[in-house]
Length: 412
Image (cartoon, rainbow, N blue to C red; front, side):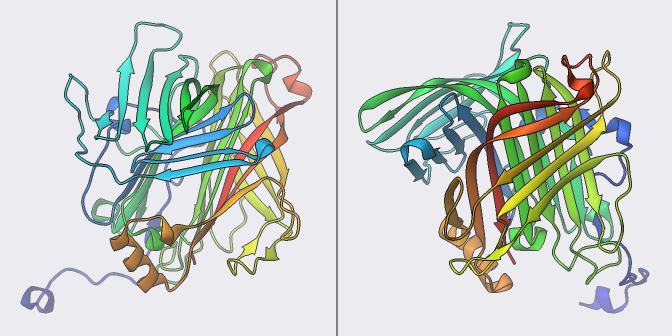
């Protein structure tokens, strides 16, 4: 107490910037930061730190499949009217597990996620995922990353990928970071109630950490994951969050900052990485575009939020392929339907019903809201333009058909 009374430290300017976006200090031609082994190692920090590793798989028949580590797993196939959700509190969790693994791997009684480097020059690394989630669901999955599609974060080096909350990034109140594999190959099987079913498809992996209570990090999130087998393999992903009013360019009350990161894979090559920050009251005019636009919002009486009836996603940034210089652009528009007639809605997830009790109490008490995640799965098309060297016809524009899994999260 006395140290604070007699402190000689200069007072903090209440209008000083207290949010530092991942894109603020990274030049447009240096957005791609290749992942290092420690980037996908589990941090396992204490306190209110939320860490997830999620493998999103879109199978050949349009099913979306994404296990994470608690262990949770969702399988949805709208064409068959199927939806399976499992959330298991694991026992005897350990990372790294015995057997010469590092912290990119983990294991518990109910599951194992084991990282492996390979001697295959076309697929140099991957994961083996095994899970027994009860008598009615067992999972076995092999995930491999193509050498032509490196994992990435926004910005290079150990500080790459971070957005910081607080006046001083070196003594931050909290942080957010995402690391991605934007496209991988997945094979395996699931056993549902004794019936085995093969899995084959493409997907993405994201390692995400929120170094602060979730309700303080963001008031809203958007996530898009598009995969197509056309043009030799295409993916388009975005992760976007909007800060709370507490964190912005001019201190508390200047929040509502929108941070969006993403990427495009074209011809089974990582074509570009995008990152954009939209500050309230300012017009974005830079050469890089990474945006999600909610269109035709309508009040949802089930959640009390303004749900979008359509969403448009945009990407634009320099190519990261050395022999295909130029600007790569893409746009995707998806119809999500109305309250009366949904289009591809998987579920409206009551977040407080799914997160651990301690975090649930803190979020509910502080935010005083009931956060929800809308999850959709739809067939749609991605419009792309870019250097002809990336894919034939790209310079005049190409449309590719594929499957989009997307989320819109409302927290406050």
